Image (cartoon, rainbow, N blue to C red):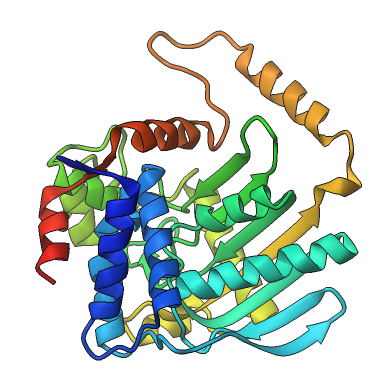
Length: 332
């Protein structure tokens, strides 16, 4: 396992963005994309940092990502706005829409920005941290291609639709970033690269048995929903919400092309200045949560706390980089 400083990884990724064949990535967009990939790796989400760049570059080469596209507003209903991502880079569309939600919430207290025709946003938590840094509570979610079976089925017909909830706090933001499966496909990839088993059952093998083998789950595409039937139901509800609010494509329509493009998303923000006692409430909840007696060898973390620890460690010691992925980047 290699380790690199944040600046080196960012420069290399930015250069590769501009160097993708058949593209016209402008310097500022290349740098913005590279920064998001780098920060994802910095925070320990390697599956959506450097390890995901190859997939992103392939989608750009295929013309599925329009590098010049900018989001355009198509409708406004009070504090709800609908935007069209015009198939631009998903990370840039997501950053734009979250900033738009922040701006509207700062002026009006609350905002809901719905986006259609966009691409993969990489780590959804990126935009939760963005909102929290701006002093806003946020709820954001996206649909995906069908990569998980509904509870009781064998064939994937629902998305692994991530849900992100962020609450700002001066001592460390509270940020929940969760897929609807026990392990996201990105996390499965991490364990595959390390040739390790999952710590808990993550899906089903070819014999229909629960397994901790990430390669077996990749082959069957039968991931285990979080909370079993509850995670399955939540995935369906998130798909309904993003498709209705944005007027965009549902998981069913996205899956028809066999490419994860043209997805739909929602970004909601609430200005925390409306709630001057919020910091005390957060402190009370965190303190009470951590007062529980722990299981031997375990620790209690609030959502986002481990991310803060990893960010600090990787900033000081360098970002761990998979050697295979790094060499692919250099030879691209």
